[in-house]
Amino acid sequence: EAAVTQSPRSKVAVTGGKVTLSCHQTNNHDYMYWYRQDTGHGLRLIHYSYVADSTEKGDIPDGYKASRPSQENFSLILELASLSQTAVYFCASSAGTGKCCFGPGTRLLVL
Amino acid sequence: AQSVDQPDAHVTLSEGASLELRCSYSYSAAPYLFWYVQYPGQSLQFLLKYITGDTVVKGTKGFEAEFRKSNSSFNLKKSPAHWSDSAKYFCALEGGTEGADRLTFGKGTQLIIQP
Image (cartoon, rainbow over all chains, first blue to last red; front, side, top):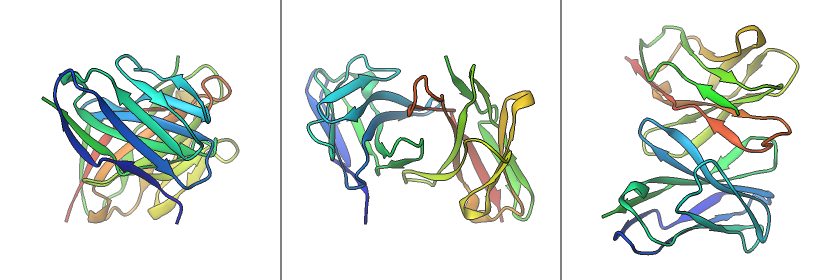
């Protein structure tokens, strides 16, 4: 069954440390996205990608990098984690129709 | 710039009532509009979308939504509501060719259906 998976599902990180969140999709979708969810803010787009080896900045890219080494994989990198990056992170894939398939989410706590 | 507003952070209804969750949007061209649902502790699931054509679109789980260009709204409806509809609902907009394939979400409406 086609799906979007994320790892880890939860993580505790220290301030200033490096965090890598991974996403893998088997939907054969060209588009992949990273969103963060905070209480009171809904979902906000961090980075997205249309094709392998290329990424685009979303609405809140500061403090985040992204990597798309293949069609199936899309990573979100926090080089220097900060307290304000505590959130739930969702990866999603899409065929370009706006109908996204979301992963289960990663709960990140930065201490 | 595009934006989505869901003015009601919380809605509480009794089971069997009719539900309508409000969504308004701001976009300079023809929008593509979506509703997603998030059950507690889960990810988001697609409910329905409006691209063009009929202004009333039907989706999964018995939901439908009506697109009204006159007041830039895309309200979600269901009747009757069931306790299992309790969840958080997100309206989203994809801004056509500009910013294509980028969904902008509203802040969501937490729906509670009381048995």
